[in-house]
Image (tube, rainbow, N blue to C red; front, side):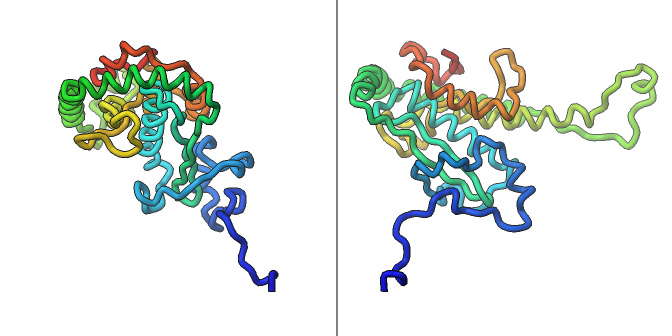
Length: 256
């Protein structure tokens, strides 16, 4: 009789298998958002609310920006006492998330001191900070609409060939796409943040504040994909953002 009982509890990540025939599609996702053996020790759940359909590797830039934003906001900007943001994983196009809880009473107490200074400031100045955020979003929308549309001619002008330019509009076309993705990441990074202590959306529909969605260094250089996971883990270990930077999270300052 006991042999007929179904196992209780949630399945471990290691028990999930890639759908046969989609192995190459799974390999296209960055290594740091794929399940690893140590993930069996953590609790994960399928984020069907935000990602009800399978996500392609390219489309995952939206999740990357959002979860980086949430992690920085809760960990370093507002210093929520009991959490260090969330991690996400993907298999078969399905997005799973798991929290990073703070359980040490001494660390919770230390973070609570920082949180009180930051949360109360945001509550007291919400209308002004939200107005700043709105203006920045309008500027981003304007910049996105102004991105040039690249048209490829049948033949590159002869004078370009004679001048030895070495590049054509096809080389420059991806740059506009990169700028569009960067603007989307900045949209999440520049938000006035969710109301501190609330794990849902912010008043006015704003999303959590975050710097980490951008995949560029301060000098503008592209961060290699394989380094982004290491950077995300390092962000969680960083000390809090100085409280005076709260004044500028809605106007473009996200560095420590």
